[in-house]
Image (cartoon, rainbow, N blue to C red):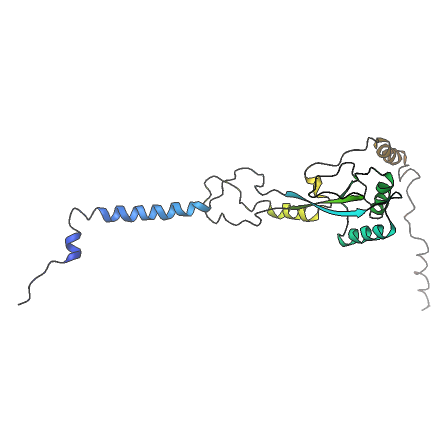
Length: 238
């Protein structure tokens, strides 16, 4: 006759342990529910958390100079560098001219003017020493981007804080950073030249107000001319 052995599972789940199973299940359920809150939006404002970031990079070229400014060969080399760099609106050009020769500045200014750019008065600090008889041309180029976009990290259906998605504003800010001609305008607006433009706007407004109303000469005759003469000739049967 086989020996009766106690059931291990029933022995462990005695009267003192039965109450722990529902509590353990409830704890696991709450833990899983709170784990889903990790992707809940926290930005309660209508401002985008992802904003454009402007970065600057300096590119340099050292050119040989003489008393007359820049030799023809150096002018051609500098112009070729401008073309290679795809010099465009928004770039800043500066000159480090240790010899303080105005002919050098004028020659570089004339080449930059072909691309519609002007020379800045102060050159940024760059690495390396300038050799005697040389001048350094510095191009400062700014780029704008929105780091972290797109952002779909808030994947929770719950939104207890009524926050906006981390991806809120990514499309607008990314398009703005891609389309703006001069990224520096994102940091500060264009400075005025001191010239007043009120006279220009007032001239347009005065012209609009001084214009004679369209109905001042009376209404045009809307009657149709030459439309009659089609109702005669009906008595041919007599």
